Picture 1 (cartoon, rainbow, N blue to C red):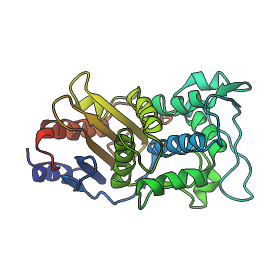
Picture 2: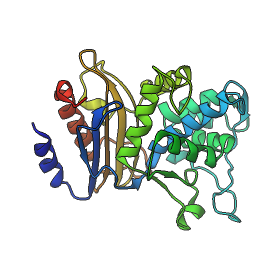
Picture 3: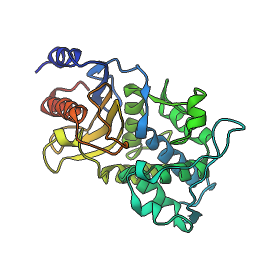
Picture 4: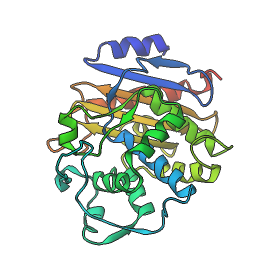
Length: 288
């Protein structure tokens, strides 16, 4: 396989397929429409995770302290009524079981990533604030990604306030986390970056990027999906080559998204797994 072959394969896919592949901290080996914006789906939850850890390191939040678990949130649209999440549209009944009680913020942040809980995400955003999430993107070097609202804030969405990502920006965020675990960086302390990577390593949704890797390969990653959208973003840690970032963002009819937004293994998953497998095969030849 050559990168030209992979481009030719993706040229046949209806819609937009963006990609970023490269070792950390150097110029990427291969990109494809890496600055094209896509609806973020749940990939934006990584920026929320960074914002939480930054706030905790600054003493503004206690990750181990309990916070109320309530399903009612302020809209990002000024003057709009408060909104709530729908349980059937979520992926984690464990968080919903705590509604009306409390839960540690760290636990909610973990459920936001490993189970992609929408309810946990909105609670976390309520604790840290959208400006802090925007700062996380900026510090990572992201140029086009925006987290403008919480999940299912339909009033804000209908007013044009949205959540957007690019493959290049997701790679920048993940790259800074991975490099930041080994030396001081802009996002958090090395210990903080390592803690966030541990959460990303524990990701339970493994139907796209991880499905293209050999069993047992370590990957710190987050995916996102709604009907028409499927993204996978991660850093792969081979035992026989340096780590590398691989991000594939798809806005295409291949992404089924399920009748209620639940995760399904669809053609978009298989496409991302195919790209991941091709990159794995070329892991020794990546530039850097």
